[in-house]
Amino acid sequence: MTQVVHRYPLHLDTELRLPPGYRILRVGLRPSDKEPSVWILLDSNVEGSVKIHLRIFGTGHKIEHAAEYIGTFEEGPLVWHVFLMDPHPARCKGYYAPSQEVPGSGEMQWYCTCGVKGKFACPLREEFLQPS
Image (cartoon, rainbow, N blue to C red; front, side, top):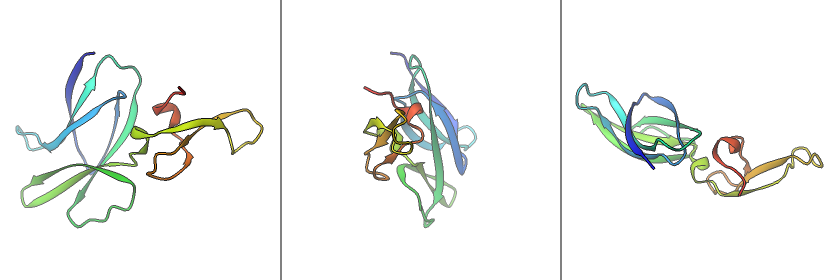
């Protein structure tokens, strides 16, 4: 296992592809130029990737989707809050079962039981999960 910390710039909406098992360490302004950034611990030996979506909200802004709080940073008089949007795949638990969309097809489908959105077919299951 070889771990390394990487910094990524943050925008109002940021999508990243990271190896599974990533760990978000902190958000803040990069000291050299005050660019909003996220620091993430990665294992460089892990194969594959997952897509994550980070979004910045200002204090008082409505958050109308499933989101997991990551951190807060200040930029002058403004205070910004970073959230991982639609976080269910990262902690998804569920099961493979015959598809209910096409009964009798023999196709297997991942069904989430993670509780963030209830029980449903996870369209990202192949990116995040393998059958046990």
